[in-house]
Length: 151
Image (cartoon, rainbow, N blue to C red):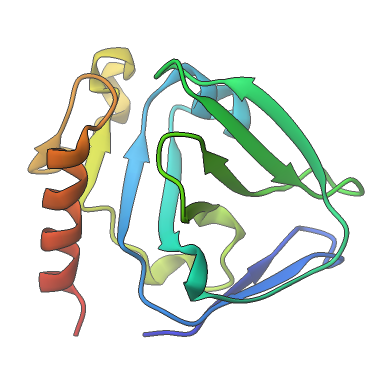
């Protein structure tokens, strides 16, 4: 279904992804709850080489994530929409906010993480789930599962 396109609420930042996501997941960590103002965040992970275009001015915010690793978020300084973030422990990849995609309906989360912090009514019931941060084995399982769901 590539390319994926999206942007912020006011339209001053736009992006296009030229590859399928490595994975789409629901994250129940406290950082994602703060970032979205909701019970969880939808993360669309891609290789940095899969970002075809990213235009517009953004501001950055760096914080220590629930995993203990630094995360740098980029958001629109006009409307405040979080667009993407970079996680220190997974170089060469970046996550895009699922809600920032134009066609959000096309996304199917295949996993959920930080389920120990999930509010009970917000669990999605994904077969792949972890109570805390994902490790390399879990990331590999998400990539494998995602490749089976992409036409």
